[in-house]
Length: 93
Image (cartoon, rainbow, N blue to C red; front, side):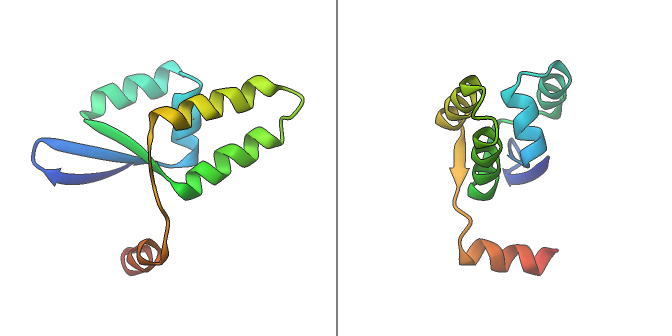
């Protein structure tokens, strides 16, 4: 999980696909780690959203997977991955 500090008291974690999937499935280890991290907010990028939806589409035999993904997406902030985000990522990578 990545961390971005807005100020000393607020940490927002930008989750990757693996971390988001684990939280979406309510895996105890992921939830415990997130609680211990001190994160005040969590979010994902639109790239992670694509990967979650794509993975759910691969499981069309189990509609509950897509339902779980949609419910998760409805509750989390999704940051756009636009040209500016790509440029910023390229600079820090």
